[in-house]
Image (cartoon, rainbow, N blue to C red):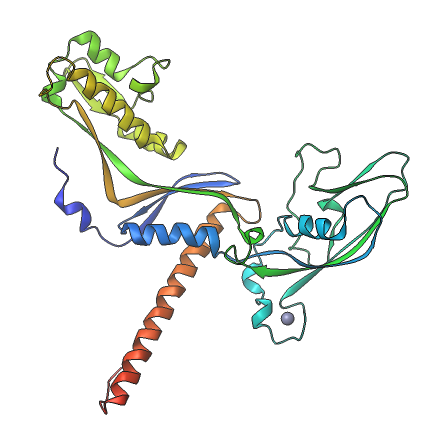
Length: 336
Ligand SMILES: [Zn+2]
């Protein structure tokens, strides 16, 4: 039941994808310290570059919303950003104001000629770059699809020119590519077989198959199995893998389950041993990353790893330069 001492020695860092959909990835990062794991989480939140509308020039606005309100709403429209790496940051670009290397121009020119109200949505925005366009937001509860910018009545008009630029979530939340990044340590389930063997058979069945309407002592189905022949309870590792890919809080739930059963076993005798223990794996972390739709979730993870690597490289260069400068100052020569 003791934590294995060799777990921290580990090997090379590695990534294992547990589950992948169009807007969400669940993956495991192996053989890293919590500081590295948390750095990756923070980079995914705040330092993966994306495109967003950053400059708005209102030519005509007779809608009910004032210019600043509309500019703010335009900035928050998620734009497809797979190409963001190919753009310069506006502050680093050699142009004076904006150019195709750092900016994408958008226009919106709509007049409501219809008898009834008309929704102006992200679909009315026209981009001059084929790959930097508002995300496909069909099915968000609007007839036309797209993200509603303003609702206009008959005769109202909106003419706008806007410029999208590259940025990161640290500068403004509109550049954040993720809805959520959840991270937790991987876990392991240790069963105390000697203590479990003292339970009556009906309690053993309850332990491996607790009714689902009993949440504190509830264990996800098939994670624990009772072998009638060997008379032993086993951890079903395949079910554990499936559950942690499905629910990042799986080990938290198992910890409740363990606490409930250990308390039960110690009701009559406080010195009775624990039946089950859930322990953290300090070198393995599970992430669940949900994209806002601006880029595939796997790309967010990949770009974040690249950003983190570049930070370490930069640090290495700075340290080398600092040492070199210090050596020069003291008249030493350094072979590098
Ligand atoms: Zn430029």
